[in-house]
Length: 343
Ligand code: CP3
Image 1 (cartoon, helix red, strand yellow):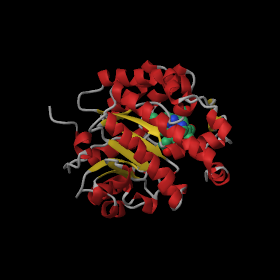
Image 2 (tube, protein in one colour):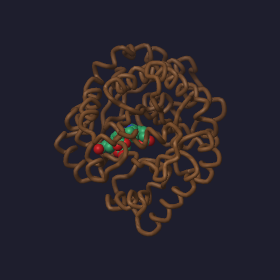
Image 3 (spheres, rainbow, N blue to C red):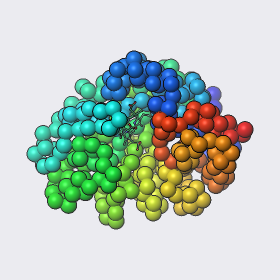
Image 4 (tube, protein in one colour):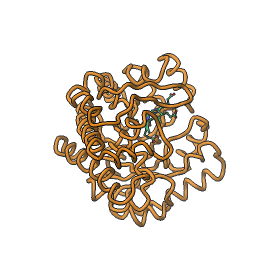
């Protein structure tokens, strides 16, 4: 069998048709997702019930035939496994117990203890490795330490990550200890996903864009570099996708500085800029505006062709610039795929 297309792109191959998958491809825009989620009762039960988590992971593969499936889980399961309280309130997003001091960080569980909570996630990966079509790549993932820390410090999502920036300024030792604990936990968590059958891993740094200057180096680049080095030492040849969302100029050189095989671009940069400044160093993923999944039409076709054309001279994995939203129309997803594959 020839190698899976996403693995070929991640090795730097330029394919006539780029492989495609979509952030949040298993999600509330799909009626079958909503049905399985209702069966689970709540979001965390869905994440921790391997048969149901595998089912929702497979739904967009069956419906659309994406080239990759991403494990259904959440970046906040690791903080929970480290001992944080975590709950989801409908319509309000995640809530967690907060971290404010070095004592709070010391009170977290040791990294070895995370597998007790996360074992069902590894089981989901094993089911998927068995059940996915032979041509579909299985992507595992975790949140990057800075983004996970912003939720652990604030106890919720924040528009500007102010509580995390405040702790970083007020108690650097506590902040660094938290980043280190998450970094070590992420290495163990992703390593177990790979042992269970994940073929690629992706690090989501959704709030990387709020780190400035040296902070970007210290808290976006350095933890990613440590995680990627440790994973590649344990799993030689493992491809890694990094997503330092809204990093802007920070995208330049990010792959080289961290060892990532591919940098995912959000849609705050143009594909032309991404091609000239990031794809020149290797594979990129992205970066269609997810709003097109709501509005569709000829504008969608034009925007897809624009992304394809701009990235056509280098290795590329087609994706959105961020996750698809619950108000998106599945018909527009099918249309995007048809255009990418030559429709
Ligand atoms: O399909 C996939 O992409 C895989 C599964 C996945 C989810 N979350 C499922 C999910 C992945 C990769 C994530 C990552 C994630 N989770 C991130 C990083 C990526 C990003 O979007 O920037 C972040 C910041 C989170 C934390 C999180 N989880 C938030 C802020 C929310 C609430 C937001 C919302 O849309 O309500 C979640 C919940 C969540 N994670 C949902 C899904 C499908 C919606 C929950 C539901 O079904 O009610």
